[in-house]
Amino acid sequence: MRIISGKYGRRNIRPPKDLPVRPTTDMAKESLFNILSNKIDFENKSALDLFAGTGSIAFEFVSRGCQPVVAVDKNFQCIQFIKKAGSAFGMEDLQAIRTDVFRYIQSTSKKFDLIFADPPYALESIETINQLVFENKLLNKDGWLIVEHPREIDFSEQDYFVEHRKYGKVNFSFFTQD
Image 1 (cartoon, rainbow, N blue to C red):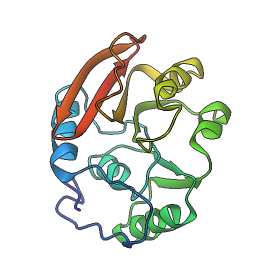
Image 2 (cartoon, rainbow, N blue to C red; image 1 turned 135 degrees about the vertical axis):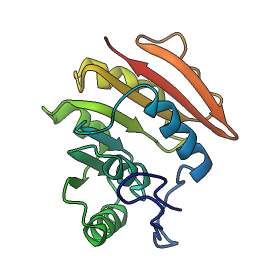
Image 3 (spheres, one colour; image 1 turned 90 degrees about the horizontal axis):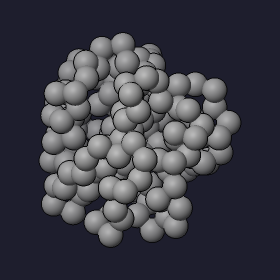
Image 4 (cartoon, one colour; image 1 turned 90 degrees about the vertical axis):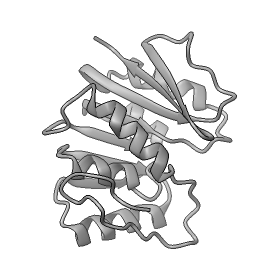
């Protein structure tokens, strides 16, 4: 696993093998960031990585100039790894928070320009993540929410949905509120 581009581009991310995660593949991550690069300028945009796991997406946001970047995961080992790797890379604008994602969504007063959510595919409430983000007003005007999900989930009829992209077994749904 690696950081694709930006200030920390080509640096390898070596998480412990025992982390309970399903990281976004490098191919899918590169495709995602190519799409986003055509929609936004990352420089000085705030970003939130929900269900951060290895922190791969958060690291990519920081590398491309987003600040601040918040990574949220309830797993202690994941948060410890993100903190350790972020510190080793010198990522001062990265904050890793250990808490339940749904609790964070409902309690934070922060707003973000970019939000990426990669919940466990077996999570029963996966289809509510986008609704909760908009209900709790976590996106800034012209902000983007991207949800990674299994192919069985279809967000196309939900509010603020813009498009769906598929890369192998990885599916991304994009939402925005203008």
